[in-house]
Image (cartoon, rainbow, N blue to C red; front, side, top):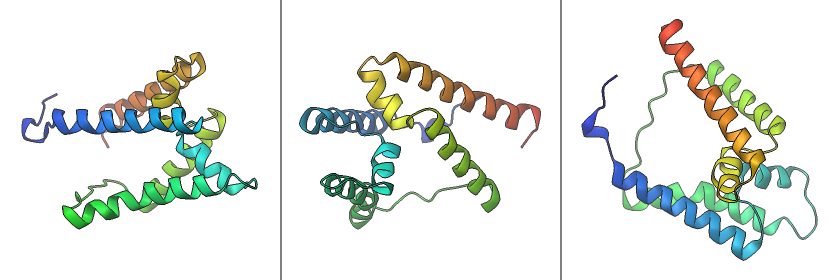
Length: 144
């Protein structure tokens, strides 16, 4: 394995991670809520009176932030080496996984681990392990 040093960006990655951590910490401290995307979106699918406004604002910010960023800088061009069917299947599997795991990567990996939640530690180890295994099988066994 080699590292593409011209694409290695530790400072921007560190800054992005720090901003995500700061935002998650502020959200739980100021609102008493976990910034897990599947939980925020799931609450909009089964709305409870008085609980909709902050969820809509959260989702608008999540979608709107890249649009605002695009006003000042060029958005990176994604390179996706998969067909539409594979992307749909992957999205469905992620959705099923978040239901079975009682949360998503942001809820467990960012917020849960920072609160030292044993359940989040197990969930994060499970989804990271599944990701590692999937990449290994796809690249090294199937050669895709």
